[in-house]
Length: 232
Image (tube, rainbow, N blue to C red):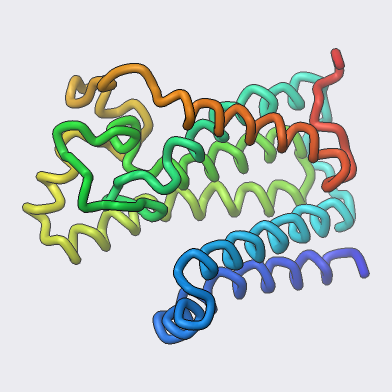
């Protein structure tokens, strides 16, 4: 099955794979059955499978060009992806009560917020950067709808999470926790409200670079096209 119908079906399946398991009653039952770690593993695997199907379905949709294809466009995701992978490596499972994906949030120190000082929402900005870069490299209607939608969702999501946390934590408590952070990447650094606390952990750095290499090598087998720019 191909065409716009598959793309719409893949979109619906992707949204359902995120919305249904996140419902409190469903999430509680799944965690009871699978355990917290098992729930996260299954959730991540299903999300990756749905995302892969969505990207493949966009490639099968009717080709409606929106701009000429040029060699420089392939460089955009190749330059962006190392940053994306580092944001994921440093943002996942670290103390950060200001966004999703945090772990051991009781260890979060507002005066030394770690990756949250760079941006409160490293995983959402990784999604925005990934999707925006791939929209540039694929200037046709299906891919611009796909990747543009992801980018808009991610950027809008940062605002939604900030408002939700202000409501849940109370604005004064949220302001204290977020005093040395910013939503916009590097905003707190430019404003002088945050400085890196030292060299980055080598384990996280190696994880990010390893993820980048894995995605680079797996792109052609999974997606069907080489991600490398024309010089390669």
